[in-house]
Amino acid sequence: MVGVSASPHPVPETTTQQPRRRQAPFVDRVQAGHQLARNLSEYAGRDDVVIVSVSRGGAVVGSIVASTLGPRTPHMYYKVQAIPCPRMPRLSLGSVAGDGSIRIDTMVAESMNISSTDPHLLRQVSIINKRLQRDHRAFLRLPPTPREMDDRVVIVVDDVVEAGDTMREAVMHLRHSFRPRRVVAAAPVCLADLRKQLQRHVDAVVDIVSPLYVGSVSQWYASGDIVVPSEQQLLERMFVRTSGRFDNS
Image 1: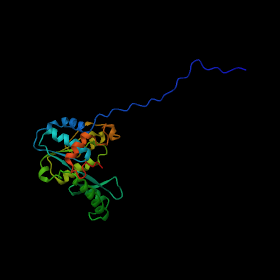
Image 2: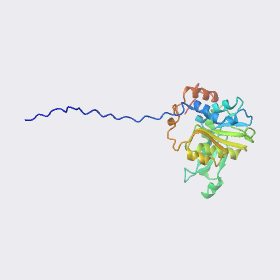
Image 3: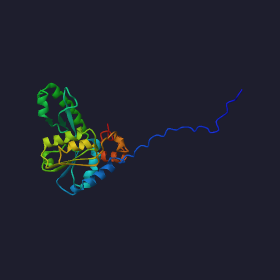
Image 4: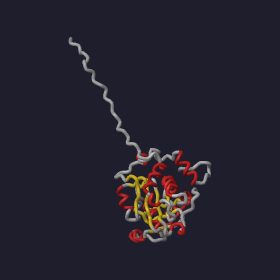
C-alpha cells in the first residue's frame, strides 16, 4: 500500500488585498473654503460683493470665503427648493425660497397645463415654504433684501454641486427676485457636466475640482457628512442656540 506524502513545497495562503481608498482632497469644509477663497481672490477687498450660501454645508464654506475676502463682506443664507411637477417629479415647475418668494417657470407650467391656482401646486408650495421657513428661523442671518443684492456681485456658494438642483434653482431664483450685476457660482467640488450647465445661468463658475463623477461626499471631504468641531464652531456662530448645541438634522 502506497502512502500519500506531503508536498515538499507547501501551497502559500492566498490573501485578498483590499484596494486602497483614495484620500479625500479636503480634510473638511473649512479647509475647502480657504482654498476656494484663493480662487476667488479677484473679489477680495471689494464693497460690492455678497456671499450667499445655499445649504448648511455651503454655509461653512461660505463663512470662510466671506471672512477671507474681507472682514466686511456680507454673508447670507438663502435656501431654495424646487417645486416638483405633479406628473414628472424630476421636472422643476419653479422654486420657493426661504424668504417666502415663489418663482414659477411659465413655459413648463403651460406645457403641463398647470395654472397658478392648481390645488396640487399650492399644496406643494405650502409644504416647501413651511420647511424652508423652519430652516431659516434657525439662522441669525436674515434673508437678503433687494437693497443688499441689486447691482452687486453675488457669489453663490455650496460645498458640493453633484445634482445641480440646489445651485441651479438658487441662481435662477436670485435672478428672478433681485437684479444682481454679476452672479458667480462657487463650490470646492462641481461635477463637470453640471459646470457646463451652470455656465448658461451665471457669469462665472469657480471651483477647485471638477470631476466626471462625484460619488459620495466622503470621497471629497474626509469629514464626510458629519459636522466636525471646526465646522461646528462656525455654524454655532450663525445659528440660534435653541438647545445649547447646533442641530445638524
